[in-house]
Image: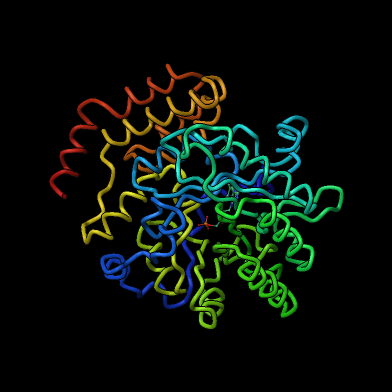
Length: 393
Ligand SMILES: Cc1cc2nc3c(=O)[nH]c(=O)nc-3n(C[C@H](O)[C@H](O)[C@H](O)COP(=O)(O)O)c2cc1C
C-alpha cells in the first residue's frame, strides 16, 4: 500500500502534457539553463533542476543511490505516516503507508535527502518531524540524516477513520495550515521545510481557492518551496497533469521557488515543464522507475550533448548494482520480491523485452537475477547491439 494504491499507477500512461508544450525546444532550454542560486544555497549539492520524487514502494535507499550515481542531485523519501514514525514502525507498516526502513537514509552517498512526512494531527506531525531530525543529531556524519523535511498534502489514498491526511487536507485549508505551522515550529531553523501539494481537490472554484490559501500560507510561514503535482486529488494519477494551472499560479508569484510534478516521462519533459510553467525544478516520478538514465540524459542535455541510451552492458551493470544495494537494504529475500517490479520496467529498455520481463518476474534470489542477466545482458547478441549503439553515438 502507499500513495499509489487503488490502481496500477506505476505503469506510464500515454504522455499527455499541456497544450503547446510539445513545441517547446527542450534542448535549447536545457543548454541555456541556470539553476536558481537559492536552491544550492539552501541545499548544497542540489545543483540541477530535477530530483527523484517520493515513490511509495520504490524509492528506498537502493533506488535513490542508483539515481544519484547517474546524476540525480536530490531525492525525497516516500511519505511516512507520522504515527508510523512515532510507533517506531510497529503496528502500521502493512496496514498503512510507507515502511520505516524505506525511509532510512542510505548513508554518505544518499544525500542531500529530504524526509517526507504525512499525518492528521499537528502535534503528531510535529513530533514525527522532530523524530526524523533526531537522526541528524545522533549521527556523527553531517551528511547522514535528512537535509529537509517535506510535508505531504498530496497523497490521494482514502482517509482512515475519517481523519484527513495527505491530499485530503485540501478540503480543510485551515487544518492544513495548522499542520504546516506545527512542523515548521518543530524543526530547527537551519533545516528547511518544504511542501508537496496537489493543484486542488477537484475542479471547482472553491477548491482552487483552498489550494491558493494553503500555497500562499506555506511561503508566509517560512517553507522554502512547494512541489505542485498538477493533478487534482480526485484525478489520482489518471489523465493529464495540468501544467497550465501551475503556469497561471506562477504568473503572479514570480519571486517564489516552486517545483513542478506530473507527466515527466523523459529528460526533455523536465525542461519542457520548466519553460512552460516557470518552475525552478521538476520532480521525476514514474518516469524514473526502471529508467535511472533519465538523470544522466538530463545532465547531458544541460551540457548541450546528445542524450545517450543505455547500452546493454550499462543496463546489466546497473541492474546488478541495484539488486545488490536492495539486498543490502532489504535482505535478499525481500529484495528478490521488490526487484521484480523494477525488472518489469527495466526490461522495457531491452530489445527482447517480453522474454526478459518474464525472466525478471520469476526471480526468487540474487542467483536467479544473475541468471536473467547472464541469459539476456551478455553474449553475442548484447555485444552486437552495443556496437550498433556505439556507432550511433
Ligand atoms: C507508485 C507511486 C508512489 C508514489 N508515492 C509518493 C510518495 O510517497 N510521496 C509523494 O510525494 N508522492 C508520491 N507519488 C506521486 C509522485 O511523486 C508524483 O507526484 C506523481 O506520480 C506525478 O508525477 P508523474 O506523472 O511524472 O508520475 C507516488 C506516485 C506513484 C506512481
